Length: 71
Image 1 (cartoon, rainbow, N blue to C red):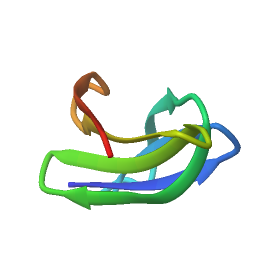
Image 2: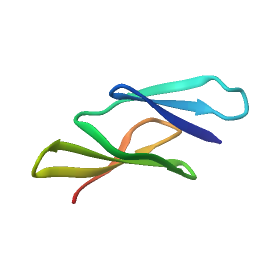
Image 3: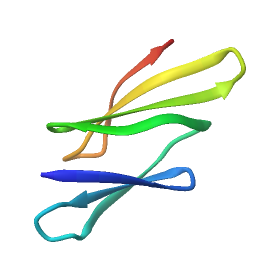
Image 4: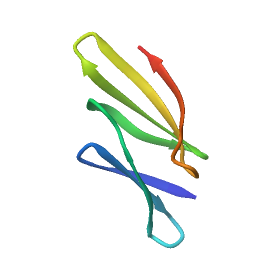
């Protein structure tokens, strides 16, 4: 199980059982909402410019980008 917190333009993925940081994920833009953890996925909403806002979904176990959706 994982949890996530923000630290500047990074998201720290934390192992709930041990309390250790498993990885740091860097994101571009200004964080609008999140991180929201659901199972093995984490989503955030970021604004890159006044007209470009995205919901970005990452894998918690690998830290890899799964989806990026413009909203």
